Length: 403
Length: 224
Image (cartoon, rainbow over all chains, first blue to last red):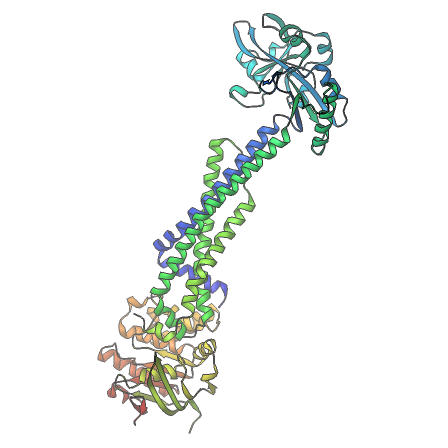
């Protein structure tokens, strides 16, 4: 018997008991749909985390001061004043460093006309754009000359500009920061984000200006280092460590008075966590697929019992064991594959909906689709084989007598 | 004598249930020639069902040899038996045994399915046979939509569609009223006239009288 004959037979059989077929498929539909939906949610989360992290700057190393220490009392990490502008300049001389941006920030009241907002005033250098992956929307960014001259110039973050009611025409106008007049020279492109860590709610000024008016001294809070390529990250990190220990004249047995934070590490950790999550979700969903498969097996066993006489008749008129086996196997396979295809469609619908609500891009992952369909076919075969064998080995005489 | 289609030599069939052995057929020797119409007659428990199973290649003899159309049945495995049934025998059962929820046409075409005949040819041949048995306008009817007599005619059509060497009818009139039963017997006689080999198994001597030759079974032995 050809496969087409078998499929035709299976479809006509399923067509004659539609409700039962639909209910049996429902198990597989739910299983496959949840696998597809949950895996897609997992992948959506991963890509959303990854894109958010890389928007903070690519190949970024962040050097922070160590904990302040008075006797045996340690302060919070980053509380000491061990990093200086000189450290930043020294790091700039290293190979494979694409940009170095020391940062020193201060919370100040910013006033423009009738509007005002209290936000973070970040003092930095021109490299900040590369290191933190910002782009200028209007006007220009802080230049080296401005840093040298300690000019009172300000580049507004997109949210800050909006809060102050300033648009493109504000370039060249004057705002008051901490009571001092600053000239607005640019407005940054929005990065997106919200809340306390909003990367668009800040004002960029030359670092020298912050040191002069707000914080004093030549210490910096953070040094952002952009490494020219990802494979160099570890080397550069080691070089910076050696360099800063040398700069700070630390004894060989003294611990570092700074920490270097690796963006890539965070990224790796985050994606490995969400990758594990995806596998976990997919795994849980697969359980329901297996349950669906058991449903198919159950129905097929009932079906073999109910159709014992039919099997007897078919054998009497010339069906071989393998004809009966393939008939029942194809029937189970048709059920599970049909359920699998419907499940994939439902799953895609659900994941498109979730992606819309959560606001991440909906991606159609061929691997998941093929895997889900293949898995449902496998479920059909695995759970269909036993009932089909039961049918195939029936003795025709006994089967014909069965009432 | 014409060539033997059925050749049973000292055939026995013994059922073993645990330690008890129940002989259903004992040392039966019988031949049926091509074109014969034979009735195997016996009361219930005489071994005629076992005889039907053996002759119909649904079962193998415990002892003795059975040759059907030249093939020794005892040597075959289950698939071999299935192939032999498919090629050589057309069954007609007491309870019609049509496939449920399946049209008359598909029922008749089913044996051809297992012979690997193409769909087009299956439809063609099945339609022709049903037409010959006066069921032209019942092709799409399912068994439940047919009378007993019509169902048995569909079953007969199914037995004929493969052009088998042997028609094996097991109490074909058992579930029918007298008129429908007579019709089926008339059909069998008609087929016999056309040169088909028919073995009719029945407990009813009146029905058996339609056959050309009778064999009587009692307690698993041929008594006449």
